[in-house]
Image (tube, rainbow, N blue to C red; front, side):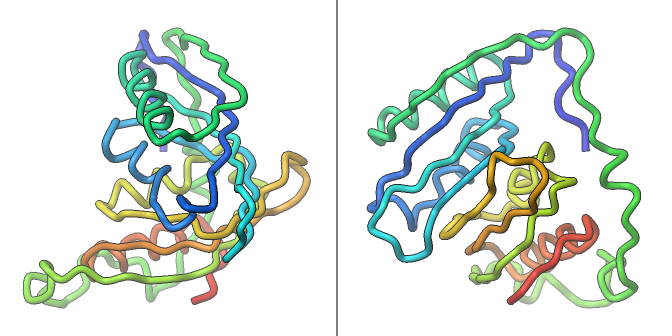
Length: 198
C-alpha cells in the first residue's frame, strides 16, 4: 500500500473526541469514503458501550481541499478537534508496501476469485462484528482505510491503541457491505497477518 505521492498532498495530524452519541456512527469510515482521504489511526481509546467520550489521534492525507472538507465535516458534527497540524508533502510519499508483502496468507483466504457466483447475493447488505488486534508493526499503516477501499462501511465501536509504539492495540469493528466485500475485507486483514476474533 502506498500513501499518495502527489506533490500537493496535505497531511493533517488531529486529535478528536467522539461524544457518546456518535459511538455507533462510522465517522472515520465516512471521512475516508466521502472525502477520498487516507486516514491512519495513530492512537485511540474508545470503551465498548461507554458513556464516556472516545478519542482518536488521526493522520489524514489528501489534497488540501479534501482535508479541509473532512475537517469541516467533523466540525459540522460538533466533534471536538483538540490538535490540528498541517504539512505539505513533497514529491516523495511514504511507502509502506514492505510491511504488507512479508506476510503470507493461508490457502483458505488467498483466492479472491473463489468459484462462487457472487452476483446472486451482491445486492444484500450484511453486517459483521469482530475484534482485530493491530500489531505494533501496523501503527503507521491505514488499516481501516484499506477496509473502506473494498466498499465497506466501518464503524469502530471499541478501541485501544496506545501512543506507546511498543505495544499492540485492538479495535472492535462493525462492518457493513455485501457478502463479497466482507469476505474480501476479512481476507485483507488476514493477509496483513492481523489476528481476528469473530
